[in-house]
Length: 301
Length: 272
Image 1 (cartoon, chains in turn cyan, red):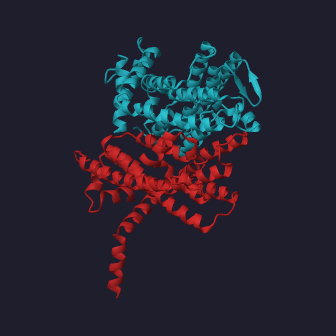
Image 2 (image 1 turned 90 degrees about the vertical axis):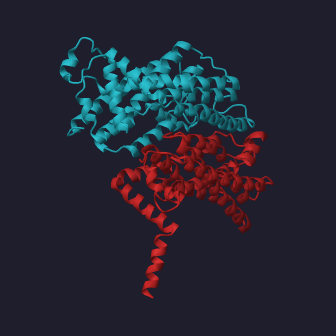
Image 3 (image 1 turned 180 degrees about the horizontal axis):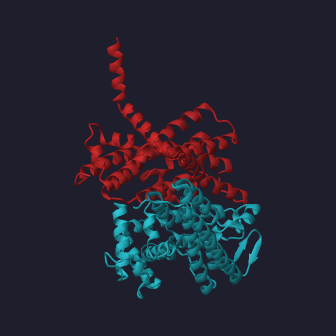
């Protein structure tokens, strides 16, 4: 069923770009004038949006789930702050703001590109992407964009309203840098998951590795707790990993103060570091991809 | 004599326990096809369970605390919670994934035409060996907490065991509600999220929540029975709300059973 749905999705994506006759040879399509990447990507975004729209009720579950998670955290921290004014430099309001912003960023960042790529490799369907005139990484990224546009409408906005009604004040300290950092975090989270999926070229089934990395990502990205609550040595280690740039950095930039491992940085500088790390991660992924694709063998799917 | 023994073996094989054990064996055998991934997944399941206790450890190592609870008492509570999950998830909570997946694929019909209870068949074909990692994680946390707390008298252990049984009953009731929902809400794996979030309240001392929330967690959905009450019983500080909570849990279970079979009755398909 998934395969059929996926196939129809891909066909409709390409057709929506207005380029494919059923029997048109791929090479000739590749050189057609209206086959420029932006048009293909726009079609991928539109089709992903429509596809995920069919499962909007699943997404809407977040409107129930997230406020409950938030309430649990609210009670935990309220109990803790009864005995002291600050915890690792956070006041109660800042801590609640941290969790609220972090959860909203998680809505934007979530994707299953790694799992999808792993399934394609495991089932051999990846071979169909090798025949297409579109790079899979861009295809996958714009799928995420399409899906997250709907998540923005169905998950993020209602939960944001709940937070505002709850009394959380959302006002980014530096709106431009906050937006830039959130966009970079969006790309970084995609690259992390996509790179996990790329490992399927070596391991075929990557459920275990995916779980390990996603757990590590959860701990090290600041989604569970602000990273500056961890022991100092561990914070230094975290600084050099890509995970903090997906969630912790955007949240701290939103709040307007970045600190990790006893090190503070002006907001523009940490956003610049984030941009560099995104570029490094992209290069790392491309290198892995280059090596991985050489290993891939398929006999038609 | 021999015929008598053969008939006993046959009876055992076709008893509920025999069917369940057979399902367990098949599930393990199929999972062993990817041994490396299985071992890694099980290990990760164990590590995942440490996330809650990790938060507790970090909170306490930053000098903060939950009022009225020391670090190892909270870890004990969380250990009990994880132990309860560690038993329920591999052994019977797989019913949820199983039901949702089968309804989505249309293979739920195959269980319905079997000459055994649909509930038994759904549980027997849902043994989740990876989740044994959760059990190991729970045992470890429980053990660490116990080692750092004073020894408890036998009476505390007995009341703990009774309440722990109710913790498992609550888990089973949750499983029934989730599976029932999975029959009508086709293909929605996020049903899990809904209940896991509600269960999250059970992972922390009841006293940190507001009075109104405490009432909900005791009388409406007795999540406090998952760990808070059993931990209090083991520590010898069980309060008067435990009896209404036990009563609520029985009601919750009965409602869960009724709901599950009602949903099974409403199930429609075109033959898989």
